[in-house]
Image (tube, rainbow, N blue to C red):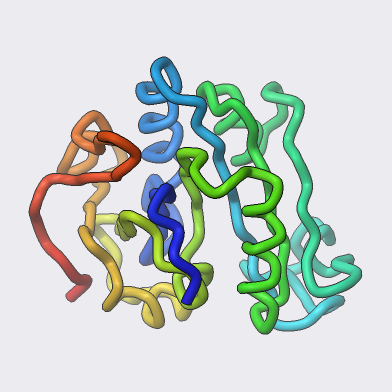
Length: 193
């Protein structure tokens, strides 16, 4: 297990859980005092397999050549999660597309780019199987009845579960702190039911 204490990892139990909204809110507030680096991880079972979200998808993940690919986002005006994180104030934003069997290799390569102590905000469920962040938050929609497979595997590792009602979270992103390089969150529900 790779230890990444400088990382806040944000996963989600289901779709529409507010993961990117929450991440961007944290980035926007903290980027004023710290050079936050944001990461989105998309893990796929096999190269040239279908979209990990189902359906036809955009084709980007299915075109993965090699065990992983790291792309830096440079355009904050695009309509995608990585652009939203850049627009929120992240100093740099990376998208790691990686085969699930090469998660450790992919994140190690990315850590060589970001540096070991850069404050990181990462969106991923599956990465939690290979890396232990300083803080792992799991977001879920208040109407969630069934957790997606990637969430079921990592839910026991969540430090805090945050519920989203479509407008607000049961704790504010302002309550997430980065103090002396350590991520903290208010005490609360520690695992998904």
